[in-house]
Length: 405
Image 1 (cartoon, rainbow, N blue to C red):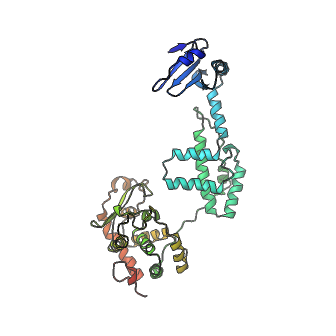
Image 2 (image 1 turned 90 degrees about the vertical axis):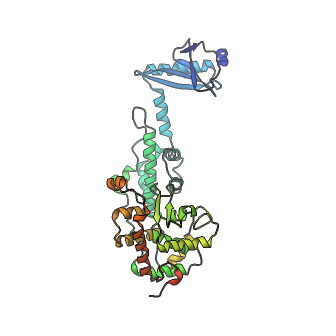
Image 3 (image 1 turned 120 degrees about the horizontal axis):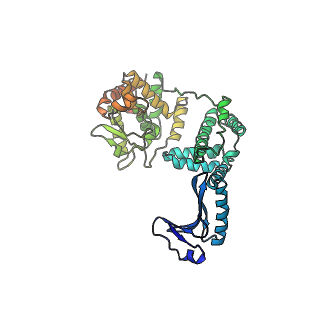
């Protein structure tokens, strides 16, 4: 232990270490010292509170004089001797003043979320709680939560209200755990969203079951064939014939496509469950991708020159043409239904849709092979069934060969 009579002269003569830190204790006041690091010299006070060692930062030497720091250290050491934990008080004060925006920042830093997910969480809070972002969490009461929940429900939708407050609840609960003391005591009250549960206010989610019915296939393909956008029809058809998620199809690159092997890959960083998946092509999908390759020679992405294809305008026109609110995910759901009709075993169906097997011990540990050969017969059967329903007679999926029903 290094000791010295701390004064302006001795402190100025102390050299900062090149790495790590070093403490020099005052010979005049026990528990008072200065901590040296590569970049600074900081006064500290160290004592025991109810038998436990506690160290408190007093201030930097370029801000406080040694006399000011020693006087402050005496106060701190006196409180410690009385059983007062200064650090716990500071921690509680920070917790009491943490704002919703600060809590969100800490939450996002702690979670390994995809950039798009993190951006969505931030956007939801900013859109639905703009006046709460700078407000201290402790000031957001259960009554305020219920009022805002009802307002979002009325002005937007039950879905928006549920979604906004699920994000709020996750951020608040994290902040409550993050700001707890070392002894495990919470410094923030219970999450005010608990009032929504107590009052049974949460809206029950309505499970979406929309999909293309058998009689809609001809009109769907006919509408695609009339599209002025040359990329959009292939994009929609690929999702219908493969069951890909929107983002998986929109970010597909030619590096992911192996025409020789008749397979394509969903990269782990794109897949929702974080698992890479190699899928076989049906004959129809192979023809579709060949068309795309010929139409955009030299392109990196299958569907756009950018990193993510966005077909919102074309989708709006398709809905108008079909007179129904078809969504891209409805096509994925349609694919799953046709795959089930084709007799696809459950374990293979999960792999075709790249669903997580985390809750299924057998699938997670014994049936996780990624051999596309096992999937190929069922993938082909689904595409053939789609051709039959749509009235496509050539088997290559070309929209120009639709027969009238």
